Length: 160
Image 1 (cartoon, one colour):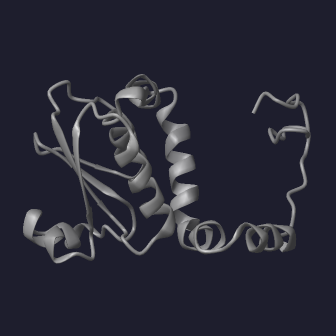
Image 2: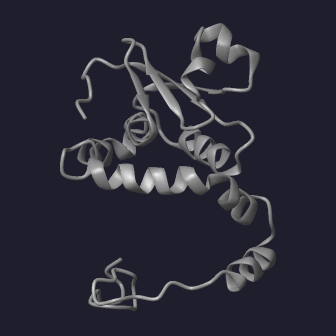
């Protein structure tokens, strides 16, 4: 991913009904700014007004980020630009944009996006006790010799 150096402003079109998306939006807004960011729920009438045709790009499937220079970024690349907008996370954003790390960011982004509504119901709309009970009822994942889950396989505890 090539991040243009002249970006001053980004617009983020996200799902305003998704607890995970809204929590991410709130988190980014609390960070010291390196770029100006305008978050727009794609369900808002302002979305189509500010970005005619945005709904044809299916923003309900994955977040869309538009830069002031006209580039569009989706999914993991959009998340990277959101991190770039945060003064304290610019270095991390540039690392994630590298050819080596971007594929991992894409996998994580797609895994989260595919489950974001279920994750939102579990983590962002329940009390801690209900979250714990829900997680306890979920089936566990068995590890094989290539497992990279802390406490299992060949990855020592504390490294993940």
